[in-house]
Length: 162
Image (cartoon, rainbow, N blue to C red; front, side, top):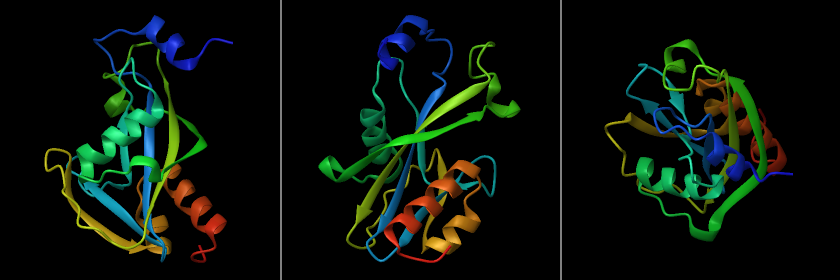
């Protein structure tokens, strides 16, 4: 079996984004969830997300995106769930990917903090952030995969009914 990173390196075209990303759920031990509102589209709420660079492994991308989007340094506290989702690339973003790419592979991670922390928001990407209950986060998250991860993690951790 070819290692996924090696496979993507062989297909790498720097003119296009790699159709592989990370989703990092940030929550507190009490079950609060951090959501970020994107600059565009307006009203799009999500956890930390980002595309993998062509030569990057998913855990490295998750650590990089955490720092870029929130200023948080997870170190060994980052939990790789070793699962994720595959979803269609929506039309407004399809031009960023090679014409043959229609789906994105998303890798899921969790960073559980003892309590809320101050977030250093990347204003180029996000308008604002909110710490909300798990149930509120599951309702507010704009992406179906983000809602699914919130629900699955909170149910698994028995932190809040969803």
